Image 1 (cartoon, helix red, strand yellow):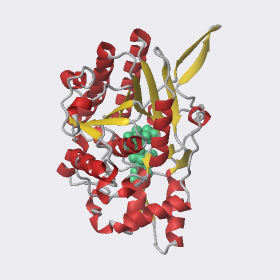
Image 2 (cartoon, protein in one colour):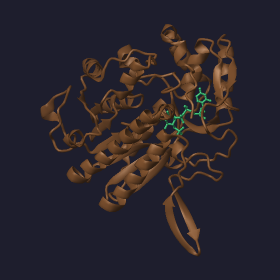
Image 3 (tube, helix red, strand yellow):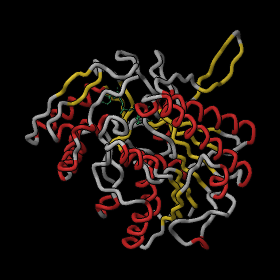
Image 4 (cartoon, helix red, strand yellow):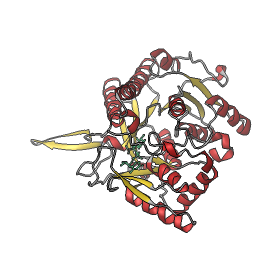
Length: 394
Ligand code: USQ
């Protein structure tokens, strides 16, 4: 089985992905600097579920399954730390050092992932740019120096494309100009510093693919929702970080948590903003498909990683309906939009390539909504109402 290195292994997607791949007998190592959990503590916007640190969770995973998820804690914007993951000089904080195998595949989640966080002030904006762009550049350089055959799977975002008035292709656009043709990266026009940092990552990776022939899969993912996977359900202390606050919480996770405590669902502006959404379990399956179907060296392969498109109003309506079914009275409230974004726009992204590899999307339906509400209800006493809306503005 392949050796998988997960950068950002403590995050919402990183940890469940690590357990899933470990359960499938991939050899997994996770790396993190605990940025997100530290900021959540500092800002009093902690996860709904208790999240022991990576060392404790890896220990528990080993006890329950006999499988090892190795852990290395450090800052990926430091060149020597990134290099250590590829040159055999890794210092593990958990796991057997003697059996560390160099990675065949690197999954890069290690980014500041929040649009609102990147817009708080100049310092947070700079942190986002430096962390995201430099960690990506360090990764490229370590791969170039030590193992050009390693496959980078980069988490990109649908938000890089913005909301253009034409169909969104999967990464590329064929342009005909004055009777000549060329395929270019599809135009990108983001609407936050965070999303812009991801465009910069894409440019760096495309440069490195052209210049040094590294191999990259860029997964253009929409907002992810969900609270459990088969592996997190094994034990409460294996849960993922589940944020519902306005900084790290994505809209569906926020709305479901709001519904549980009778907080009117915070629709920003008119609520016609449409995005491509994906369940956390689908997201992990897509990552596995990307691992199994490597591009060639010198190829940047781009997939739009979403399961369906929904407007904010459609999401809210589905949740209100399901709440009615189970006897919860949920209301909505239109807030003055704290973000600068189009509220009425065309949105037609293609998302066929992952389906061609076997991806079967699951939808945001009554079954999943009610299951998530019941799960959140178990932790109702942990919900901190003051984290929900303070209006972080663009
Ligand atoms: N929204 C509301 N009410 C809320 C929160 C959000 O109406 O309480 C709206 C936003 O205005 C936006 C939409 O819901 O129109 C989605 O917002 P979001 O916070 O769920 O997602 P976003 O900020 O775009 O970022 C999230 C992740 C990010 C990922 C991105 C994918 O935090 O890491 O890259 O989703 S995408 O949006 O496709 O770029």
